[in-house]
Image (cartoon, rainbow, N blue to C red; front, side):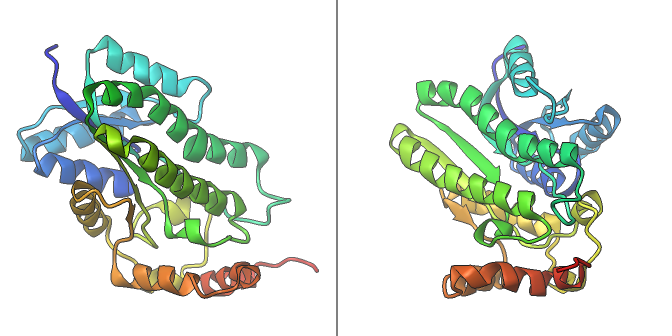
Length: 265
C-alpha cells in the first residue's frame, strides 16, 4: 500500500467519534477507524465511503485489553499507514457509589480513558516529531474541570486528559506538532447508557455530536489547545473559576442529580 496520510480515530463507530469521522472525511482526510465492534466499524466505513471520496480503513481493537495499543500501532506499521492526525476519542464513564461499583469496570475505564490514550500518543508521536508535523486531538470533557461524586473515576480520568494535553502541547509545539483537547459537555450519544447513568435532568443543554465535531475540527485547525464547544459549556467553565474547590463536588452532585443517589450517611 502506498504511503498516505491518515487521521486515526479511536472509538470511531459511535457518538462523538463517529461524528468526527464524518467531519474529517468531509474535509478530505483518509481515515483509520478503531473500535471493538468489527461489524459496526465496517458498516460505518461503508457509509462514509458512499458520501466522501476518501479511504477508510477499519481496525477492530479493544483498547481496554493489555498491549492493545501496541497491537494497533504494529498493525498500522504493517500496513505502512502514516498517521498525521491522532484522535484519542475512545472512552466511557461509570456511575454509582464508588465502594459498590464493579472493580473491573473501573479499571477498564482507567485503562481506556488514560492508559490507552497515553500509550497511543507515545507510540505515534515520534514519527510526527521526525516529520516536524502532526496533530493530536484528545477528547476530554467538561467533567475535567470539576470533581464528580458518583462518577469519581470518569471525572478524574478526564482531568488527566486535559492536564496531559496542555503539558504535551507545550513540549512539542516548537517541533511543528499541535496537541488539542476537546472538552464537550453533555452530548447526544450512548454515554449515559454505557455509564449506567440514570439522571438526565441536565440533558436540556445537550449538543449534538455533529455540532461538537464541527467545532472540534475547526478549532483544532486553528491550533486551539482547549476546545470547549457551545456557549453554555463555556459559561460552566467560567463559573468553575470562581467556585471554591471544596464546594465543587457538592455543586456537581446537585447539578447532575447525583444528590438523589441513596447513600446511608
